[in-house]
Each structure stands twice: as structure tokens, then as C-alpha cells.
Image (cartoon, rainbow, N blue to C red):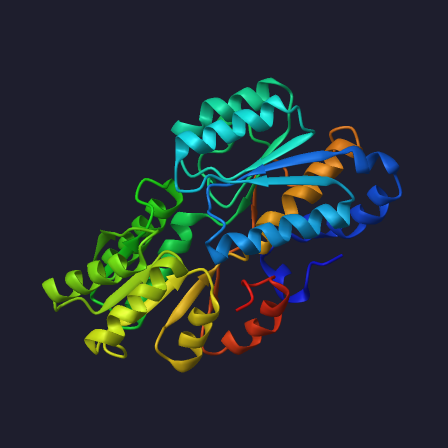
Length: 330
């Protein structure tokens, strides 16, 4: 089984205990090869974060001996994503895995899957909304609490005024990250403002961040919500001479993020171990299909994060990057 030692600290012991024996039991039964699980996520293939999720999906499908089909819209488009879910439901799979960035937009398609008797597990986004839609469990991190943790660390580092760079305003998970971040800073007597940027245009993101920093010289901290925002923001700080003067942190990992943390130009990254978000739903849903509805997770949130990558452990994380487990290989 491909789950690595460095990944499992934040996942429930009971789930992984079952996961450890599930492959042998399932693979011994030829019926597992007939199981087909459809995956629909909101993340684009160009985003290195989602390539790691897909690596987890592919590894789990191989380990479980099941078939996986992975699809996502070309842009952050909830109408297109709902259509992909509808297509998955119409194909009558044995299970569906979805991310849930917008419960209002995706709810009808997911409820149709549940009504059709298809077991559904959500991952990555949707920790606050999954249960109301009839989804069996959610695999990921609780976004608001992760934002709180980031804000507390920023405040402890002396940040008094910060920006939260949001590349997908309207994505509930990302909005909750910024809200948690703002609340933690407010608790410490500091403040935060959300700055919206374009996921598909790094140059425009850099220009937007530079404009925001120029407009308010009191800003001394920036949190980005993923590498697609972190890298242009790092370029903005470099071009303005703000590296070292403005604390920078991000959600999620990329090789450049780890290098910046190791170099001391980035304070920390909040890691949700997205490989597990692709992997664990397959363990849960394969067991569900093979053993008459037996289900692990208790119908709750199976936590894969949040953890913090700092200068103390950034180098160690590189060890799993070559396998596409902690981040996409550079």
C-alpha cells in the first residue's frame, strides 16, 4: 500500500487500520475489478495541487483493483462541474467522489446521485456542507480552522495588517480560509483584507498584489490560498523589495514554495496532504461496495490536515515530492 509514513499523522488511526487490510481483502475478490468510481473535482489539471490529488486517486484505484475516471471543468465553473456530475450519475457508477466548493450550485446534481442510490464521498472542499446533501463522509481539512491557525501564526510573527489573496472568490472553502485568518488576526488586535485575483493570469495577480501593497504601506503580512497565488505574490515582493519585510505564507505546497520556506523568504505553508484526499475516498468506497455497505469514517470529516510546513521540516518534505505524493515533481 502506498500511504507513506510521513503522511498519516493527521488521519484517524481507525480509518488507516482498516485501510491497511482492505487492499488484500479486496484484491482477493475478483468482484473488486468490476467496481467503477467516478471522480469530479473543481480543480484544473494545470494546477500542481490537483495533479497530486489525481496521483492519490490513481494509486488508490491500482491498490484497490478498481476503475477510476477523473474529470474536472477547464476553469472554475460550477455550471460545467454540475454537468460533469450529472454525466457521472447517468453512467451509473458504483460510487462518486466529488469536491464541493459551492453547495448551492452543485447540490441538485449531488442529491440526484444520492437519490439514485449511488454512494458519494466528498473531498477537499465541503466540510461544512456535505452532510446536508446526503454525502456519506468528507475527506479533507476544516477550512475555517486552518485559516485560524494561519492567522494565529501570522499574529505571533508580529503581523498587524494583512492581505488574504483569494484566487477563487465564491469558493466556499477559500472564503472560509480567509474568514478564519481574519478572525484570528482580529483576536490579536490585527486586521486583514481580502484581495481577489485571477487564477489563470499570474502576471495580473502579481500586478494586483503590487497595487494593493503600494496602496497600503502598513500591510506587513500576506496569506495566499495556494501556489497559484503564492508564486506571483512572491514575485511581487521580490520586485518591490518587500521580501523579508512583509511576512508571506500560503496554503498548499509547490517546489517553489518549499524552496522559499527553506530560504526564509516565506514563513510557512499550511499543508492539507491532498494526496490522501484522492486516496482515502477510494478505500472507503471500495470497502462500502465490497462488504455490503460497511463504511468507515463514521459519517464525519476524515481529517487530512491541517499541518504546517516551516523551515524546520521543509527539506524533509522534498523526499516525497519525487513520487508526486506531497507535491507535483518539478
